Image 1 (tube, rainbow, N blue to C red):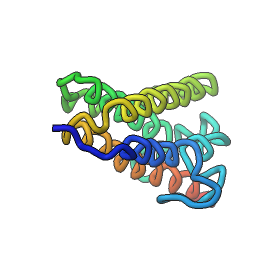
Image 2 (tube, rainbow, N blue to C red; image 1 turned 90 degrees about the vertical axis):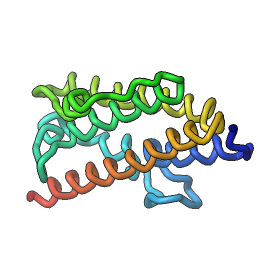
Image 3 (cartoon, helix red, strand yellow; image 1 turned 180 degrees about the vertical axis):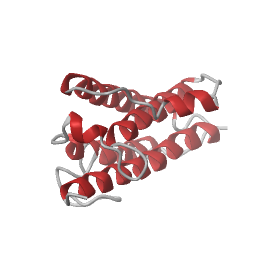
Image 4 (cartoon, rainbow, N blue to C red; image 1 turned 60 degrees about the vertical axis):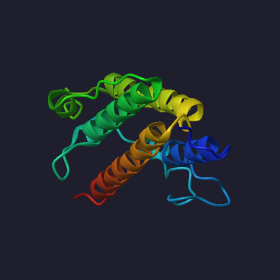
Length: 161
């Protein structure tokens, strides 16, 4: 049964965009309205060395890799792929090999690609049925959590631990 309201896809995409791009200049759902609030603004000045530094049990790079994985899985679910990742795949989504600046940039490019693909799938499928709506909302909440974790790690690093 479709979830019916014509503005749902637009609103969900706006939430996702806020997490990655920036909040609107005049208002925001959950971030401070600054250019460095979302994933891309927060990560733009993070070096590969800093991205690999484990703070509180994980690194910024592992958070980025996991967020990418979450979006890939969510996009697959919205596309009709029924297989959920198993525990081993979930665990691997946290593992990052040593990064140089080039590999760090590629990891961030993967994040952007996964974001754009999920954005497209939410716009196309979020109102297909209740499950699709859930598969649109859940990753946004999950990604907001990981953005917060990344921002905390960056703040910790800036304070020199």
